[in-house]
Image (tube, rainbow, N blue to C red; front, side, top):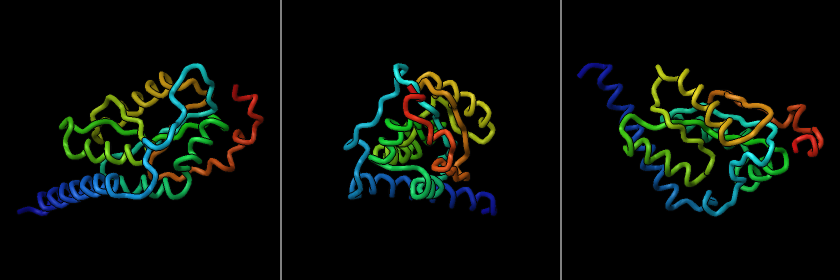
Length: 174
């Protein structure tokens, strides 16, 4: 077995393990589930300040967890950010080439737990990043009427607390 083949096998096993853990966490975990919370529904009736899309990949669970643990509010805090400040934050990911496969199931379980993913009608792949970005902006603009649309990668940590726009009076957002 060549080194490249072995690397792919290990990578596939790691993804399967991550999928199984995500499913188990969503079933057995004692943290609040997304379905237990009510979030602002995407609407054109409301003007938001910004929509932040965080490009991510199936294999980037640790990066997503790091962002959730640092700058991306969770649960009621994220709801408050959306409702009071008009800031929407979502991880952006498409679908695997094998629809309904283990990767898609792992992401569905993760989204059920956290509710912070924006699923695109896009097949994930490194050579498709430009198309993914275009699809993100098109989808975000269709879902939310915002003053700004921002795209960052999941290896970037944003300090939204120091952003000058956040301190604007709430009537400016309406």
